[in-house]
Image 1 (cartoon, rainbow, N blue to C red):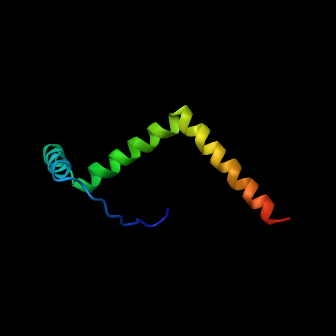
Image 2 (cartoon, one colour):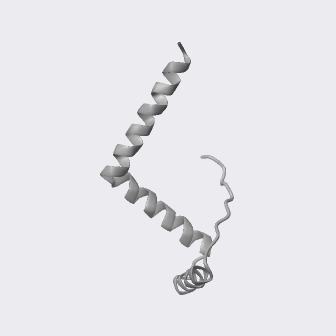
Length: 71
């Protein structure tokens, strides 16, 4: 498993207050609430057909780029 990576995010005052409220009610650290939301978002995107099509296009473009470099 890769080591954890620290990241910084900026929230509006309203988002921060709402996040603090959710974390308090759920009795969980804010960082855990954020990680769970990110995991849910990523899983949702993985199931999205448009996202998958775009990802495949980008991978194909990158592959063509690599192949052109080896000529």
